Image 1 (cartoon, rainbow, N blue to C red):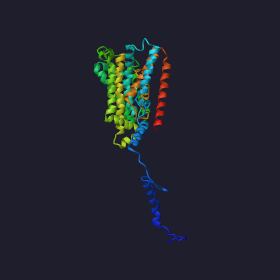
Image 2: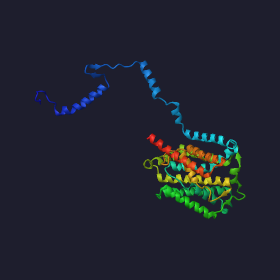
Image 3: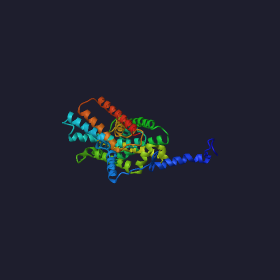
Image 4: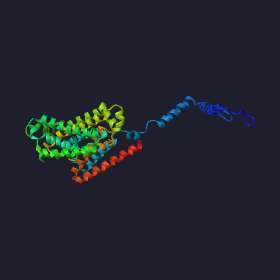
Length: 381
């Protein structure tokens, strides 16, 4: 075919292929000497020395960041700095009492009981849940273990009883959440009320003393090894065991997976409901161990034990960097957060400050920690 001017017109097939051929041509030109209107332009390759200098310059500009950036990547550096700052405040305000050996032992002993609960709370929150019943479950376990009927069997039975009661309450929480489809907040809130009420009924609102013949439990607080009470070593063992389980076992990897994306974890073959039950059972187990420690410290079992411990444990986990939405967190961060709160409490006591001011300070710290978490999430998104 010819156009009106007499030139041959392209056939439909040739017209369809021409855009592809032109694109192909442009792609070939991009990787070869470029053709200009004046003819082909020769591409001059740099010498080996020039390439070496260019690569070295690129490594300096886009290589490893400077030391301030690397310092910011150190895990939990901010928490360690906060602890150091609190220590400086203690040395300045109460130099005669803060740095003494007895006060440091007192801080560790106080942190031990809440610290064991914090380990269990870390697992639950990383798994995407929440447990508000930890303080009440600890109180129930301490009351159950110090009844006259239980004490008549000796200290070992008392310890086993406290651990089983705590684990049993955790199993109930987990079953209600996983299979009863209750929201964790509601299920554990109900357990908080029920466990505290059952503890009051069992003890008739009275403090139950550890009887003679069961001094083995009290010795956990009075016996010292290398200057530290045995309960501090129990706390350390729980922390190490929690770290190993969370970071070196399949259970720990599944906990992160369930907390990060439950549906993806289910599609990957993880039984999310069963794993949830075990998470709350682990939290209850830690409450039972904490009940033994508080019986050792106070030589009593009482329905008032563990009041507001759930808030302290959850706050320590949040301060330690664990996300409330689950999927991210660490045992080390939670323990550092706990130590920050414990040192703050100790400083308020040593300086004779009001307890209400202490609660206000803790509340502000929690708010700041959550705001920092949200900011880091937005910056990483």
